[in-house]
Image (cartoon, rainbow, N blue to C red; front, top):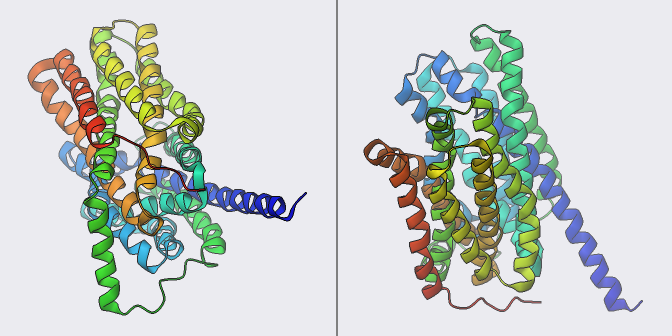
Length: 415
């Protein structure tokens, strides 16, 4: 075995070790956040006296935090060091859940939710930038595995939080004390993510040396300017945003359509959404590897077509089996798009601007996620399910010519 081969194998092992640590931290952080969110959060807001509008604000306020702070957080990480910035995000995961233990009013809940949103706003884009740093030519595969781990944490956190709350309340309305037990579990998981992450993150990530405050400010704005002025980055991020808008619409209204129009049970409606998540979870790593080897543009285009076709078909389906197939196709299309879009954004950027790029990507992602249920709800109120789902599907299709015009070629991946 040559010295070069030995060094290459050592580098691969080092990357694998770092990536495994990042995935472990990611799982715990997302699990903690999911415990604090659904279904516990809306029920907590209800117990504090909130009405429907207030519950919606409590649930959605953390997304507003992401829209406001993801881009600057990513750009700051390019200057002060990504590991240090990621550690700040983990501080919010590890410490803010303890604040829920002292909440006794709806107003306090909204404030804590806004602050807790800084956890994902800071951590999310910076963690993706760190993965892009270590991934090299495997950005599609490793970013897909990383996001799949987050999905698993989220999938486990929501039902476990609901189970704990149901077990404590024993069929009665949950008390404030019952909610505090769930948030204590969330705090322990968040603190574990912070503790494990600190071991790795405190070892590196030094800020750029020899730069004064004014120079750092200039670098901050220069990084954002260079990223947002690249139409390829914006359009690729917008593809994820549009797809995420359709996903948010489906998340909110597929269960309602299945129960109120088709006549399925709530359990069957949950299975329809669950199959979409499971298909996405299983397919993403494989699609990420394919995008690394064969290109990202074809997968994004094919994924948008699959999502549009299944979205348009759903209001015309009237039984559980056909809806299950449509949900599976949508999940596969989502895997095609999401396995390739973030990696393509990273491909277009210089490594020193990964943070700003992932921050821009995350901001557009959150805008799409927030807009999906709101816009689709307004459409359904006016036109019903059939026309409304067709409009969303049409938006997916109309985004394709824009993408193909501005993103004509993929960059050569560096060795």
